[in-house]
Length: 266
Image (spheres, rainbow, N blue to C red):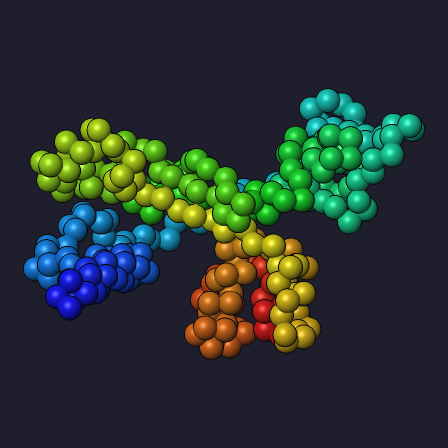
């Protein structure tokens, strides 16, 4: 009888080990771990909300005045672009230069139908994707230097201030502890010391297909800068400002901005 009890007890111990192993596999922890074990202490980076970049509108040129200046300088008028007879690529009739406003007959199909165009009057290079990225430039809010595009992702671009005399960069370096400075020399990518801005480029067409609500507004047809549309939606939708109050608060003046505002107010 004693021998049977010993065998059963050994089986019970074996089953207990199996149960402990299975529970540890399921919850990812060992149940025999002592409750007074200290947690892992890793120096995670604190959450920081950066300022918005300084957005400045680029200087716009007048193609009519440029044509007058060309004729005055060269002594002859600048002729429109003549497309090649054997070329199937054509510039859309509704397309204009984003810098000087020149019509389509002064635009080259610069890549043979692959989407890049060049203005014969001002020399501006553009395509459909970066058409309105030429409408504004981004500057660091701390030193007012131009932001440099460092990375291009699928849905956003990363801009960084590379000015070594930027006040934010100098402040972050000065406030580092001695240990952080040693780590910064070895792994500088683990520290955020420069101003970084992410510019999101959303494609609105896929959103309209999956939306359960049928809207009268087609966001993919709003030909205005992304930051302008975001500003309008923030003031008009989130804050509930009226049409004219939004117009004054956002300091919009160009026709494309007004069109975007009209679309957002529908």
